[in-house]
Amino acid sequence: RKEVEQDPGPFNVPEGATVAFNCTYSNSASQSFFWYRQDCRKEPKLLMSVYSSGNEDGRFTAQLNRASQYISLLIRDSKLSDSATYLCVVNKGGSYIPTFGRGTSLIVHP
Amino acid sequence: DAGVIQSPRHEVTEMGQEVTLRCKPISGHDYLFWYRQTMMRGLELLIYFNNNVPIDDSGMPEDRFSAKMPNASFSTLKIQPSEPRDSAVYFCASSFFEGNQPQHFGDGTRLSIL
Image (tube, rainbow over all chains, first blue to last red; front, side, top):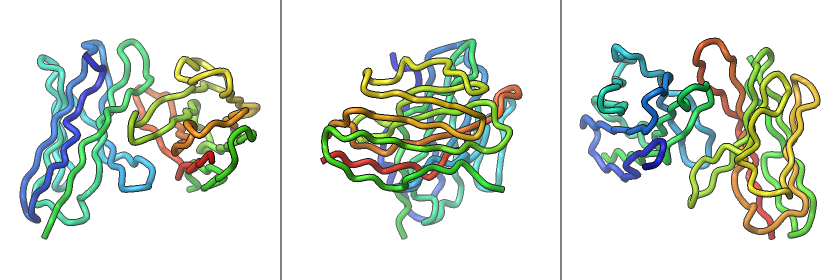
């Protein structure tokens, strides 16, 4: 099993739709979790951290399920500008060093 | 605030040449990371430093790759000799270590080896 796994997609959704991505991780000792966004030919940029109790930032909601070892990202009211690749990041158990998933591609169309 | 600064932005060179990529981390960050990204393999961690000391270089593909961090504000990744399969985007990132903090990435160097 890979350390961090994501469905590569692409998820193709209309504007205004709600879309959710999951990311599974293999190390139960992992402590920190993030979602990054990467636009084509650009660097990854932090979208949001993922806290144990779940957290929300505008249209974006992140959740952590430790029992099943996955994190999720929910995007409500999708915008054209949300089209990007979404990378989940999990730190290696016992250390701070992060492991990146391969990313999930999102395409929002008019 | 200045972010992570990488140079050059683009590099095109012939096989066998030496390539040097440069990175200036965000001031005050304790950790510096070098990544390589390709379509086939995604984002791969090559090496990381803590307080200028290399901690884990297990991701460095082979001896042709080397990295240094002579001081807190500068790091280099060198490939000698370069090969076409080294063509990729190379990112540098830095972060604090206070609990678990996210990384900040530079714009990357797009490397093409002909």
